[in-house]
Image (cartoon, rainbow, N blue to C red; front, side, top):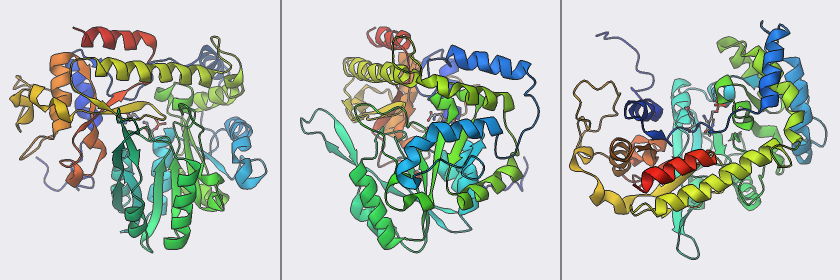
Length: 435
Ligand code: PMP
Ligand code: GLN
């Protein structure tokens, strides 16, 4: 064993490592990983083949292929109009990155200095914490609260404004928002953005905001509201998007960030030092496909509308299927994105002891599945997720894997189900859960 390895991430095991391997091993239906079950549109694939054939196979400009930055400016400028009332400058206000993941990395590592605080709502996308740790920043969270919906049939996630206000101060370097949110599916309302804006101005006017909006095109029954568009927010905000999500090509790993020139430049410096360049034919293909997104597709007005409508139906059907599975769940309200959380606390008595006791829960001493270890007690959601995969044949995510360590025991009642799926997978889920 090597003794002197630096433990920059405190052995933090990302949850996908365990559950994707477990899913493969037991040949279960994977509703854990947020991979869209719809493929990229044919026009995008054609454009990729052409881009490769035309010889777009070498490095391009460090900020991203010029054709893509031009196309992104055309595509995203209309929505930034309330903030800047002009087109986005493709040379100074847009950076192309290795998926939204490296946009987050570039933004966080360069903004947060040793010990400076990054504040986000909990549960949160786990990479936020690991990137902050790598950047030697301090990660602070404010748990979202739940309350029953008016008719009592589901749970809503809400902001705890008092705790948010108390948590802001001169130490706050960045507030990180996810809109729509992973894993809760919560979308920011205009009034909520206004409230965050006011509190920031009052308590932490020096703070920057990173708005991770990778699911911007996937809001169900309400509009997508942008943080950067309220008041003077544009000046302090980095907005992050994912070409992989927008066009169902997550494996291509092309993302973008949009921000004022000083913030874009900082992120670009980090990008140049770490990555320098990325998937050039993918950039060209996406550039040439952005316009095509707005053409009719499969009977819908546009490709994003087709995707949104497919996932919205999958969301409703999946919740229905889980609710009628004979396992007691309480649903939560999902307003956008790839996932819905279900409260599984009433299902504890169904879970066999082997999953609730620390140790190897598989009857396989040679297992190759990397298992997250717990010393005293296995959180309910982990026990549920492991049992559900091995015994029921469906893989889902334990919700507390989106929480900091000390909260894991407190919020261990939610499981996350991926609803970014077509009808065929919904049917498969129905079939498995009706057995
Ligand atoms: N942010 C959030 C909230 C996500 O769910 C994801 C999904 N992986 C990402 C960022 C990363 O996106 P990408 O695949 O474009 O790197
Ligand atoms: N966003 C996806 C999820 O939350 C994928 C994340 C990943 O692959 N690391 O499941």
